[in-house]
Length: 182
Length: 250
Image (cartoon, rainbow over all chains, first blue to last red; front, top):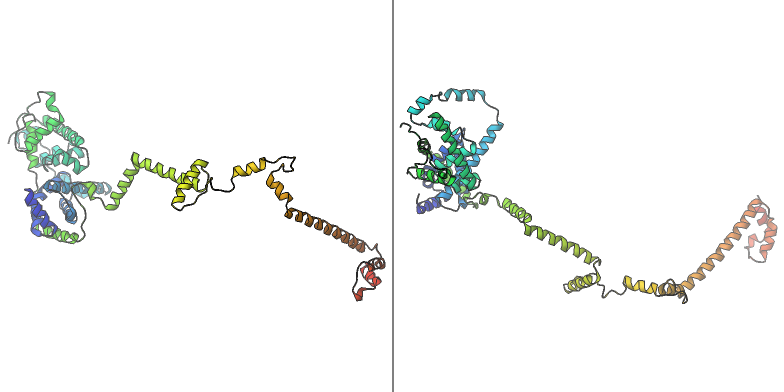
């Protein structure tokens, strides 16, 4: 998004113009929801709504460009995901819900069929499941969010060197699993 | 799309984190990354496409616009950095704790402690004389008075000199001041009062003795009355000593 365009959209969004919020939603929301889903959020709509509400409340004092805005948005989303994980950890497991999830999970496929098929969304998810929480978050923010190392470091509250190391280890691990599959 | 076999990594140098990151960057920019495996390249492309197809409703945009209008009247300082999103109260706490944990903060705490201790000692006059004198002079300029060894009339040193300066020959072996006190008019007057007190005590003893004799019944009241006629003037009704003496007899 061009700097001038973002500045005018930001000013309009601050004053409560609906068209500006629609533009921001159309621009960033699909990536935000993709990120939330890849992080295992159970209620993506709820978390996305909470994140945007936080943005709307604080946009009056926001200073920065489009990249800063995206970093801010994903930082809030990152914290919401952590909160949800904690809540889920405290909540007792709903057996009916877990059984339903089990039934809806795709059946196990052989290595041969995997080689012949294209890599679909479920397979990507399955591969990401082999990663640790931090590795998965770094990979998703890097690839899906399109953030640089320093921006990811700011979003997840780690040093850039640590983020780079997480990314390196994550892809090495993914390679290992892909080699096994092939 | 079929999977292709992965291209290997010829050199260890290529496996560095920076090189890896630059390869990812090339892939994200739509270029090719020959050093990464085909599977990884494919995974990156698939992951890039995993955006949600659902477009957010107009209702959400309307709600957000309303929320922004509400919060516009109460502006908050928010930026992309997490530290700037903290409330003022927390920012102030962090600043104070950071300052106190720094070397400068520790030095400041030490200086304050030293100043308060010195101030307390100076206020009670317990500093060494030169320091006390200097402190008193400095504080006197701003209207604060503390003990000053230079201007005080009587110091412990003067008292000690006065006490130690006397001699037994002069009768002031306990010190001139003590000798002066002992020889002044007040002490003479005190001695006279002490003598009067002793006389009074003797008279009281005699009266007590007489009273004991009366109690024992050994003394004739008429004799006492006769003896006392010449010395004591008795009231008219008690001029008859025998009556008095009888009344005393048990």
